[in-house]
Length: 170
Image (cartoon, rainbow, N blue to C red; front, side, top):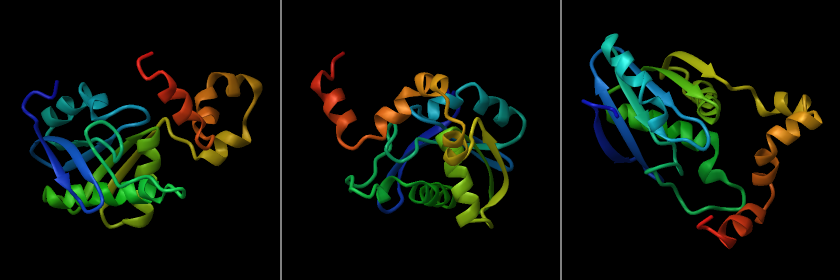
């Protein structure tokens, strides 16, 4: 995967972001969703490089080979604003102060925060499979809650950690 791409880990302050990048031309950053990593883009990235783009695929803070600060009760270290700032810092470090951004799922929410907080950085934006959480919550049905049970499971304080670490090998 990602033949011809470089890989590095960039220190951007509170986070160390693993990133894959390659190609030449107008830059585009691809942001993965939950619970994925930059590997999500292994088929798309080479096509964009072939089309004449520089492609940057980071692992978002806290995913894959990226790391962030210690967790706090308010989750501020992992909020979309903090992750969006990481992406802007990564792109600047790679020499791209302005770039296109495409985000899938959580990556779409990070892309939205990025264009709101750093409008001069984004030349274009695409949101893939991404609706604001308030929109999802306003449409909840029993079928939705059954299909998307993990949203409600992970939203509970301390429960996911206790359940998952009770038997981490299964």
